[in-house]
Length: 391
Ligand code: GAF
Image: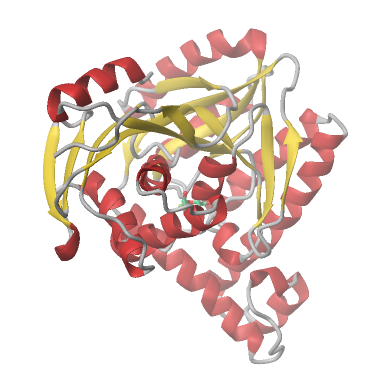
């Protein structure tokens, strides 16, 4: 848990001034994985784990960055932005690059980053840093950027500076999250609807495999390419097709079946969109059991068709499947490590975590971290400062 008083004290020690502090949360996603960059639907929510950035202005064009978690400092120059030494600082500098490209008047600033979104766990810690940064700079320099534009800027920063060809889900959720609600977002039109998610007697439990495979980044980008290849094959016969959102199972069978890999990727995405829409009806009908079954089906598709799971995530889902306290489970996020999301009956949570932790260690040799997530509001000002300027 980030303590904003502590962050404020740390900032004062480093920069002898009061900071503005912005909070941007991580996210969960109930269902709808790898659908966002295919113009499909997602069903995420912002959570109680968040990134906090503390900022104030400088009188030069330098950016002084510090990440509390790593105890690492970095100094960059706004006029000469280049790939930095530390990964975490790319998320800040990528946002600055986007603001400069769009001619926003940004000058030097100090930034201290803290938070409790576990890195590499599939809870979108990088999007949270990007969202917190763009929000903070918009406030600091009075840029008046709308929330949706902040989302776009953060996404472009990830795509162009960091190099992950991500969709919009993570940034949108960090910015637009609403307490006790999931967001049903149409990633084509950006229209969205909030669904209450305060199911009596159930909890959302995240089981973190504590591993991250090194191929995660490049494999993610190649999945996106494979989906685009599927679209191109269908497009030759149906020129109006722009994305997998416009493709149905029949078209896929007819024009893509000869390429088994591309076919499987596309099939998963088409089925996942259908599952999500049906899952929203389950939630409206308060039929959490039916929703849970869809989560297992999503996991199977991600593992067998989209091939973004890994042994450890499959083990984690397997371990909970026979537990009557678990309503649904699946890997969450981009894949190749990170965590599973589990909907669990409240009175079964403690025992489940204990049992899975033991069994997981036995089968993989890895430690398991478990979090019970609550759904919270999106990005906001956590602390204002009277003066935001310091030499
Ligand atoms: C990552 C990406 F950043 C998202 O855009 C999304 O594609 C997700 O993986 C998979 O659903 O979090």
